[in-house]
Picture (tube, rainbow, N blue to C red):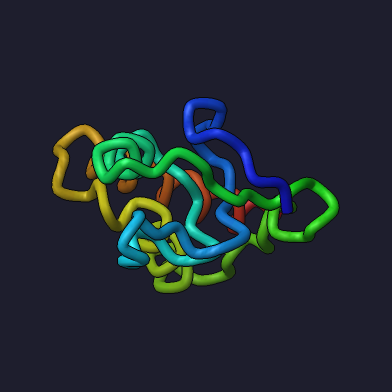
Length: 107
């Protein structure tokens, strides 16, 4: 679980510890996959260092593909939840859900 400077954090990295500001206010929970929006928000709150998971810590492997349409929708909502209001991201969400559903039908 290395602590890295926020400026070195990349989209998709997973937090190994809660991200808090100088006043210890919770900004992001442990396990959150970082997005551009998260990185901007953390920077705006003055966060300089984050603790991220490394490849050996388990959470960086791909989760199993959900079986049903409802499971796919739930999984995708977790991944797109904070960006779903954006029309482009809503379309990415919709298209991704359909692709996963079709992959499940083919296998």
